[in-house]
Length: 464
Image 1 (cartoon, rainbow, N blue to C red):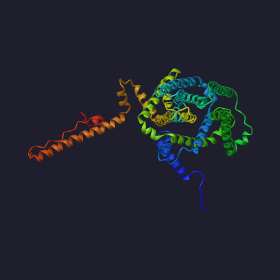
Image 2 (image 1 turned 45 degrees about the vertical axis):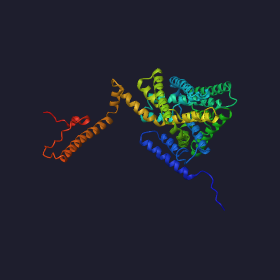
Image 3 (image 1 turned 180 degrees about the vertical axis):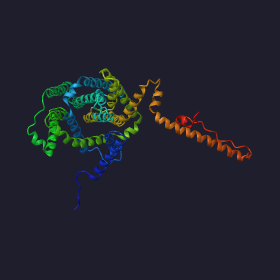
């Protein structure tokens, strides 16, 4: 009797997980966020890479669950009072980012002859930044608990909240029966309910959960109950026409302001981390390497333009909001990339038909590249800014000073090359003279090479 195998290919899954772990460890050694390694692992193992895994329904479902858990976790960890303290500048900066991104999206759509819906979705995609990457970079820079970190986290929370109406708009743009009135009504309901909830939670004491002591002592029941609340609220929100992500975020807010908060967070964090890894792996699966190879110049130019434009815009908005130069620079650089929720918006727009295939592949590729290179971009620009404070007269001087250590190594190597080259030239001339029979001519002594570069001072004799 023939044996039939069902289920998930465990060997492939084990290989993918092992590669994701190795890639994450490698990026950690390079002082980069591990999630970048997870994206790379998805690219390598994806349909356009080695083809070990495909973007199937199982991976997509797990990735969607990861998004819901991420929003649930953000809502759980959100301190309403701390957010309200930075509400005005955070909303001002986030609104400025959205307006500028919408103008940029309209410009891209005009250049590519895209539709109005595509222009709106492109604006949403560009406006968002990565909460995970930004917080990791701020933590590595030691700025997460200082003012740059506080205002950046406030802006990122405002962006995460804005994802909810963005998803409502994006999913409505592709609907055959969608109209402006229904979209405005959904957004008004979502924003009004969220605002009222934030106002009430900010004025109320901790919510008393029935049987909190009994539930809090049972790890299995606490984990299962948290997942039930998260996915139950997401399902209810999706059923009434709002985004499932909206329901997950609302559920996280309620749990975060309850007496179970401190017990729920350490329980759901490992679950959320696993699903988040799957989410970033799925991002790698979405990246079309063949498209990037065919349009490498366009993709790289677009990614560099977006990350540079967002940096300048963020720094300008933070300065306008009244923050000092250092806070504006650190915050602006940490939010220069395009965020993980942009993948969700792009996928939603593509699924509903509001986003064309070419624009979808371009937006996915550019988003992934900005995520990959954002930490390196922050390192380079922050070093240049520190040197610029020395009032150098040109960028060449600033670059020379910023990378003085690397330049010294290059100069030292060039000095040795120069000495060896002169010695070799003299030796060749002596061999030529010997072949011509000019052996009686005095040999030319090897001249003392005049040291140059960083070794010059060490080679010069000390005068008495």
